[in-house]
Length: 439
Image (cartoon, rainbow, N blue to C red; front, top):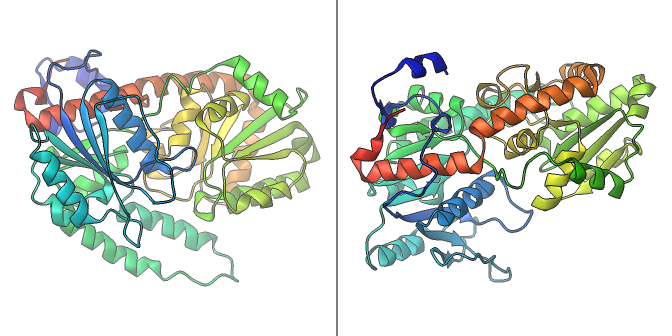
């Protein structure tokens, strides 16, 4: 973004046509005088460490809005045999229903729940749906609605291309390309039915405006945020974590990997890169420890690489905060071009440099230059080259990059920044005077 251009602007900004991330703007720290009644649709509410990016976004954002005093009604699913979390907020109300056979919200049921609640007391000021929690067939009748997209079909085509390039001769060729292109066409048609669109990365915002042809005043970029009170630099946490898992002080470098340990998150790629490096460079293997946090089929395969690979399993948030403080750099080899990965943001706020695949959502919003980390092409050779560069740069360089990463994280990726931006958008949707921003 052209910061100089913004600084020179004397007139007020129309937020609805603001072309950059709202996280760059400063909104009042105190809650607004108007308390909002917000309806939220999310197909699954997160439970403990078992949550994807969409669910974590829903939890972080709406708890922050509840803390600011807004009245929130969450329409989500609950399985009969599972316990549902509770929170100390009387203004946070859950409306539960059984999921469909496909795991989605039953649209007829949640629509009736919404109508009943809308007629109780005052009507909703705004409706927020996480992706297609509320389908377009219902959303087309709701003018005060905003949808947050955590991945769209156009971005996924890039992921499909990467997967095909990495496919081994023994694997069957994917037939998804044509289907995905038709999915883009389908999305271009039905996305128009949602009143306002929130893109969670700069790249997604550009795609929604250019490719999906949604008018700019209906597309708003609000980058994902994570809890800055949990994810922060704290040396003692890292020391305790290393002691707990017996990580030797003689190790010159600790790499961290976290998330779902599945194919499309790039684990075959980094597994092969590490395997080759360990075979060709004994000094690298002896001086580097790799911590792997998460759950999935590739966890067991990492163990085969040697004793310097520690597979920790899924970690709760408190343990994850210690994990980030114990590493020297966080590595995300994802092959998914869609969304904005929370683990990168957590690592940056913890004061760690990040290393990730060179896809548009990451290079456009997170690692925008070498100051805070490294990027690589989704190939074994490119990943190996970057791992060697990190190793040769050493801890002093990484610590400086980590400081820069944290500063960028504080500027853009905190839960406070994200919640303030959404709050202002929700106010703006209901009242025009909130759509003007004076720097």
